Image 1 (cartoon, rainbow, N blue to C red):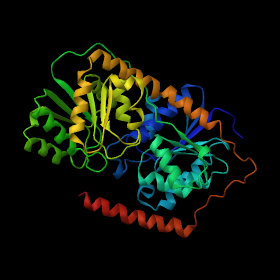
Image 2: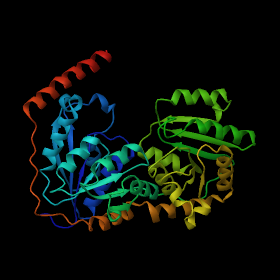
Image 3: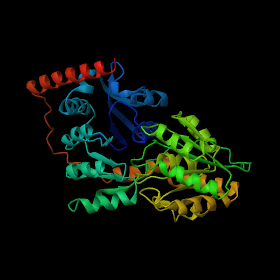
Image 4: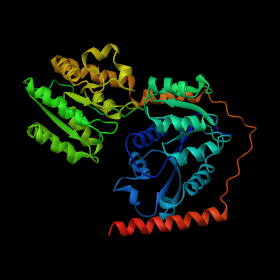
Length: 410
């Protein structure tokens, strides 16, 4: 049985955004705080088709240069294109290499949840609900009996989980936003008469409502506001959004950067006055945390994870919330935050980040929740196997899918 201050992470192989970025950062931070840390994932033998040039989780961890125990196996097209049952089998085999009794934090992949909950008797499960989204509530409903604790990234996610699952024990639900590593910043007041707005995230109507950025900018322009908007991110509707700005006669007031490195994003945020978030729903946006850490104000929709901080004492000087789709209110709030002296706004934003979203604060909250887990040492070890016919079927499916994708890419 493992002792205290031990934690494991079970994750799919590629960096996919905020969830996986946090898992890598948290694993490194735990290890640097003298926890025994295990990171469980697979290592692609060659880049997956679905990887699209992204870094692997192992590459992210290597950059941290922390004493993390890597539990991994090589994975090829059979893993990428085979059945979910096969992926679950691989994850189960790897998780069994982690000492019994160590809690395991899960990524958002359904195969990861299935594998970890199968072994819940020996590895207590920490189910992280990263967003106010059906995907996470469905996972919670399916597996709540096997999950030791849930980490909900916002109060809304916690309340909705309790409403959706009457049988869940309220005592196993904790509100813990994901933390970030706070960069060093220069909080000298910015100069200039141009209000610098910024958007960071996927360019998509689903969830992000990025067309509202056009409406907000149009109203600001009609009101005579001098501003510029940077859009950082990519997505299926980037070209469409660019065209909408052109049609509105605003193309000269907007710069599309595409995806940038984490360092470059931080630099743009540090040079900006206000981050604008237009989402239909969120968890607790990492972009919001990073903006505050850079001294950048926030104007965002009244949704999960954004609404939680509207009434914080420091919010009056750097932070405002508007109803989803209410363009007039959004512009009013932008003008209100813009009127606050830059130095005051920047210091309030940074202080909010330090109080609420630093990785140290996140780890303290996780440590407290993990201390509540009382694993049953008498439970038997689950038997992990995969019938030959299931393995054969997965290989046939993998080959067929691989050939289809290969032909379509030619």
